[in-house]
Picture 1: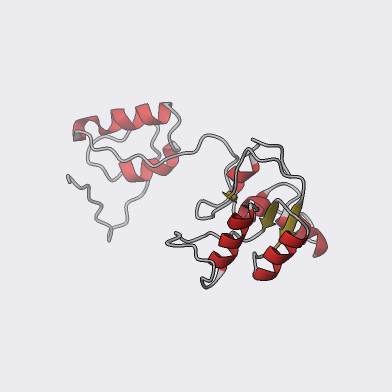
Picture 2 (picture 1 turned 90 degrees about the horizontal axis):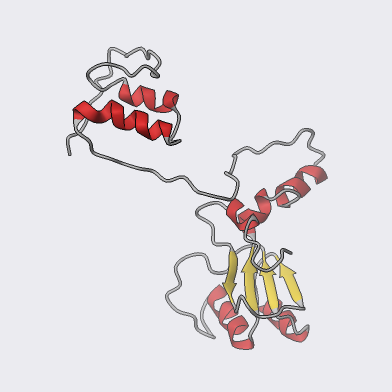
Length: 191
């Protein structure tokens, strides 16, 4: 799949997804892997018969917060328990595999003979993530702070110019003129 420690493909996963090693020892040697779409009782039994040390389940069997793992529990918790009890690791690539070059989406597009396939939604490449920053500054300094943030690589001046154009006072030099609709009354909170 990928060499140990190579987590670049996992960075392609959707933020809401649960991908990677979900159960098991990341330092353990793995020589036998069973691949499936969903972790089921039959998959766990086959992994045991084949002496697999890992199950790669496309759909993550641990998705919602886990409150308990019981051997006789309902749903996938019993299957996860059985794998852990047998020393079988569980790995899920899900949306990381969908977005990876040559991954699920590329294979399906090829099977459907899609010409010039392109992503419907772009996912940032693995690496430094962006974060949302909310700041409260004195009104006299709003443009200076915004310009400093843009100079540091935050956002784009065009996307934030619409927000700042609603601010009373002078428009910064980089802000395009944005027409104001008569029915819109922009407001700034002092909260």
